[in-house]
Every structure is written in C-alpha cells, then in structure tokens.
Length: 233
Image 1 (cartoon, rainbow, N blue to C red):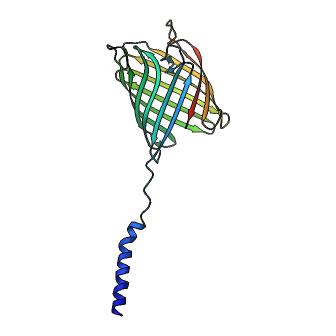
Image 2 (cartoon, one colour):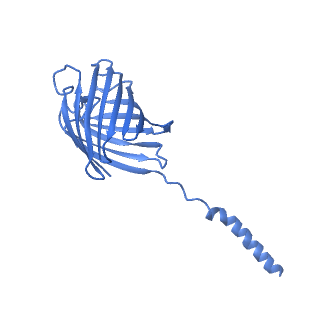
Image 3 (tube, rainbow, N blue to C red):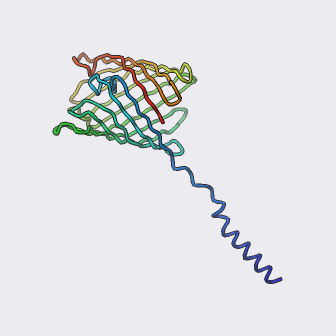
C-alpha cells in the first residue's frame, strides 16, 4: 500500500512538472514575406520622370510582422540618373492604426549603382502617410523629406494629397497633387490621375496621366500618359 501511494505521488509530481511544457501555447508566427514586380512605360516619382521618359522595371520584397505593424525589405528600380541605370534601396517602417486613421511611417536608404564617380549616389528618405477610408472613398496625406538627395539636389520636401474611389473590388480611380521644394534644384507642383484594374488576383494594370507645372525642356517634367503592370506573389 505504501509502495502504491509512493508510486502515485511520484507520477503526479512528474505530470505536474511536465504539464507547463506540454501545455505551452505554440510560438507566435514570425511574420511573412511578400513579393511584387512590375514594369511601366515611364518611371514617375513625385510627378517627375526618373528614367528620362523611357520604360522601366521594378521589384520589391517585404517582410511583415504577424501583427502587420512592422515591415522591412529591399527594392530596386531602373533609372537614368548621374550615369546610373539601377537604383536599389532598403526600407523599414510601421503601420499603426490610430483613431480611425491608417498611418505608414517609413525610412528608406537608396543607392544608385555604378553612378558617375563624382556623383552623390546615395540618400536617406523619410515618409509619413495618413489615410482614412469611408465606404468606397479614401483620402491620403503624404509628407516626404530627404536631408540630402542624390545628384546635385540637396534637401527637399514633398507634400501630397490623394483621393481615390473604389468602383468595384477590382476597379478604382485616384488623383493626387503635390508640391516639391528643393535646395539647389527646381521647385514645382506635380499631379496624376488614373485608374487601376485588378486583372487577376495577383496581376494589376494601371493607366495614369502625370503632369507638372515645370516649364523645362526634356522628358523629366513633361506631361505624359503612363501604363503599367504589376504582379504580386
């Protein structure tokens, strides 16, 4: 009888010791990766062309935390600037949701590959987005800043307002207007208006008119219609 009680007590003790390990919750997911590649008839950024009006390709990989709050990843795009035809970047940010608004706070460091030896071929760029959606309508305010841009341009700021409307779950239209103030370069206003259509679950087409008020010869600030495709996976 004593032996039986001793054995039972030992077994109970072992189960008590083992239960925390076996009852542990599974480890939370470590996040996930997503990828996107695309091409368009012109590389437009802040209203101006980064490819001198020529077609370009681009791609990005993004890691996102399980909560969706934190993200980071590399990207690339083809350009024509300071003798370089390829720009690569690393970025990281957070996407909090506060008082009904979606925020996206991002920092990016970019490099121009094989730029001219004397060129300023890298830059830091900081972006803050605030977005609000009500039914099919949404609005976004964007503020961007760089303390020292690539090339001859030094510090600059870009402030942009965007509005969009979802016609269906596959078709939406958007328009944006922004102002760029630059040290040692041109100040101008840029705008775009266009539509995007989800051709499949992963493939999206975009057709957009871009323009600026910069009266400068050449393709960089010229008004143009840009068509693009992007594939996410």
